[in-house]
Image (cartoon, rainbow, N blue to C red; front, side):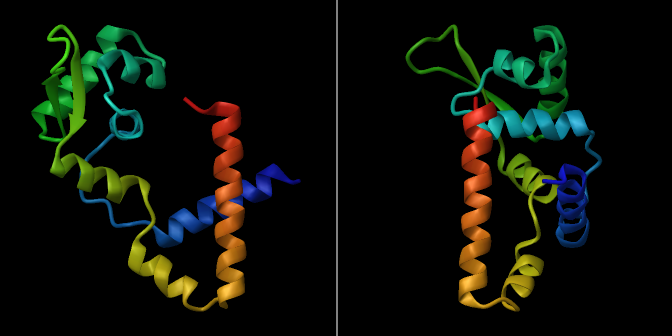
Length: 138
């Protein structure tokens, strides 16, 4: 398989179908919020692991996103020493606009496909996700 062609297809899809970005977020900001969203009960250590930075650097990223209203901290009910990082509603919305495809644009494209084509496409994406999680899953 030509991986560079696949990447071209992927980036074209994102370019054409992404939401309009309204926030001033860095790539690291977005990755930090993704780490929090994808891991249940995420901690600063989890963010550091995903970003491949020191605990101190991850803590600074988290602090800045808390100051902007995108993240919040919450103490564990079972162990008060543990602090979880959570997305706020504002953070959820910002992350959606910065990582997902615009659902209206995507639906307009999918509506042009037959039911069989839609199913084949969904099956292919689901298979790709499954294999990616198998190889790189956290």
